[in-house]
Structure formats: structure tokens, C-alpha cells
Length: 188
Image 1 (tube, rainbow, N blue to C red):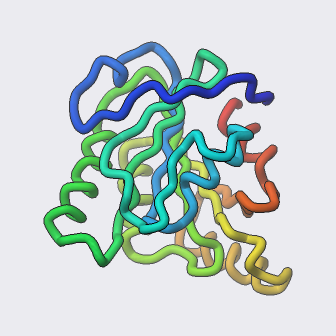
Image 2: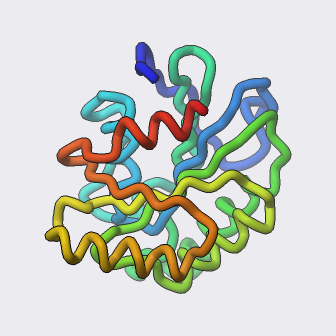
Image 3: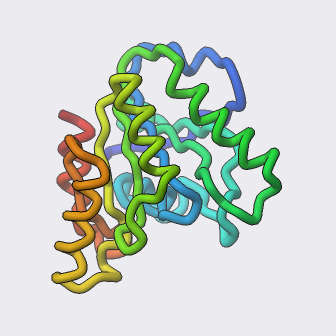
């Protein structure tokens, strides 16, 4: 799939008509600092459309991007950043869960993990919630370029064991490894 255009539509913190547009949505979710913004920019062939902060936990709303005029990429806040006040962390988790409980036209979820770190308890819980909601889930093991081949194989195997039933796509937003396969899965 070729990305011809991508524009920021809007950011929301609650109910909004954009949720109910008859456009498929691809929701990107993951811990703070796993490279969600970098991955989205890589997929969209842009450097700075999706803003990433120097400090994790910067995204505090649900941001929508219109891609090729017909699909919405949804950037959800990261979860689990320990340096945020506990009430803010809980609010962000509730916002993510709220989004996934909304009935939308059509949606896929891209769960982004740090390939080197692997999934933690929060990632496994997010995967469980997505499966429970019957979301189509694509798991992306980002930052794969930080591992050698043996480490890559070990980490992908470990992620597969902790998150059974999902395809794991090794990826590097930096080198663009895995980009074409992710886009193929998103647009299939």
C-alpha cells in the first residue's frame, strides 16, 4: 500500500463525531517510550507529523490522522510511564480502555512493544483486553535494530509465548525494517 497523503485531523479526550465516521480506524497503542510516534511517522513516510516528545507520556489525548483520504490512524496515549502522577496514569489508561469500548465502523489495533524489553504485565493485559473486545491485533516488536540476530529470535519467541495467537512483526522505525509488512496487514 502506498501512502499518498496523511494529515492531522484532530485530538479528542471524549465523545466526538470522528469516532463514528464510516472510515476504518487503525489504533496504535503501547507503553510510553516504545516508539509509537516514530513508528507511525515511518509508516506514513513523514518525519514529524505524529509528534513525539523528548519526555515519555507527552500524548494526553487521542489523536486522529487521515491517511489517503480514507482511513484514520489513531495515536493513543502511552501507558505505564512511572514519572507521571498516579492519577494522570490512571486517567490515560481509562481513556485508552474507553476508546476500545467504543463501537466504530471498523478497527484494527497495532500493539507496539519494545523488542528489547518485551511485553510487561500491562502489555499482556492490553492484549487480553483487545482480544476480549474481538479486535484484530497486529503486534509490532519495534526497535528490532537494537538486537543481534540471536537476540531477535529469542525475543520474538518469548513475545509469541506471552501473547499467543498473534502475529508478531519485527520492526525498526529507524531502518524501516518491517514497514511494508505492517502496511500490508493494516490495509488487508
